[in-house]
Amino acid sequence: MNHSLAAPPLVTDRPAMGSAHDIRCIDPVAAVTLERFHGSPLLENGQINLLSLDAIAERLGTKWVMRRQSVYDYIDRLLERHVGENGHFMRVSETDFLIVLPAESKSSAQLRCLRCLSEVLFRFLGEARSTDIRVREVTRITADGLDAVLVDPAAISRAAEGAKPQEASASSDAKLVDRWTPFTASNGLRARVSCMLEPVFELKTYSRIGNRIAREVLCADSGEPFSPLELERLSRSDIERIDLATIARGLDRVRAELGTDRQPCLIIPISYFSLSTRMGRAAVAGMFAEAKAYVQTGVICEVCDIESVPQAALLEATSLIKPYCVLLIGRLVAAPDHRLGNLKGAGLQAVSFEAPERAGDEAEFIRWAKAAIGAAKLIAKAVIIYRLGAARQAGLAALLGASHASLVAPPPA
Image (cartoon, rainbow, N blue to C red; front, top):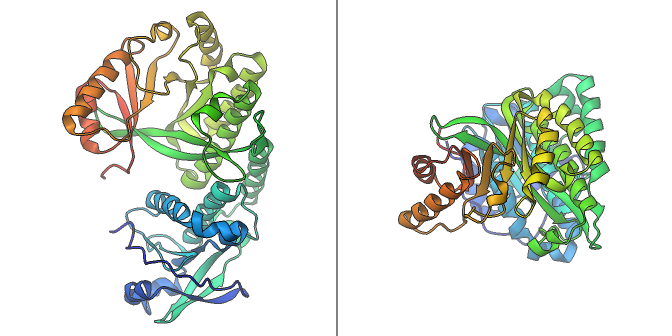
């Protein structure tokens, strides 16, 4: 099944928000594509829904025209992961994405749409107010547009999850995220943390071991990622707050995307600076204990910002946090070389780093991977390479000694 149908060109007139029942205008190209769903039982079953970006367009105002393509690109990546092999999605107007989930019940399909839209709102607006979460159930498709009814998020959550204690927990979790992010950093910028789950695979068997929390630190006002220089200028207290927001936001993603489907492991990035103080370790350890409820094997601590840390100091920090996790990974900002001798003997059981965005041809990738993996193995036995471009690269990395990896796109089933 296709993950995505071809996106139609932009339209310039956005339909205005109306009552709970709307007629949504769609692009003519989308109308032709949607002809196959006319009269479909999926309409009666509530499995065709609209995810509407009206709130983002309204809040951005005149900036919407400049920012909308980045919003579209983000949603495409998000829906590519969450709609699945049995679903479809496409943009049908300037502010509407149509999502078809034939394998899910009405409440489950609409809950998935609500959660995806909440993630988009957090990414671009820094919050997901109930009045901005506009998901509509499509009841009829015509050549002129879509008849759609605004769904009630609270009612859908109750129908899908079916337990009030879970609803109370979700409310508490939202407050936990709000406690840490957004905030005003020491550089004067309003910062917020955005997280996604990225599957990680063991390369010998190509089996999924769990997920890592991939995070971005964003400017709350513009939605743009902090530059490397801006990140370097953050204070230790800023970094600790970002770490705690990462755990809170990451667990929110686990609850939203996986529900009761417990994964073997969850890899959580934590800065060395958060682990270097007693208060920081205590806060992290407490949240690790909460995270254990969502995994089968345990939490993996990925220690960041370690390149220039003295070996003795790093060993002390890793030793003190080790009782709260099943594995310690050293996360590097770039592929390692032979100048990282301070990391050897520092208590790290694995080393992780990202693949270059442009790896060149296969021969160039092999040269890069061979050097990086060789340097990493001087520090730890296990080597994890994130965001490889293809399964072929994962296979080559395995032959060269890498133990685990993640891919930019989901791996083949």
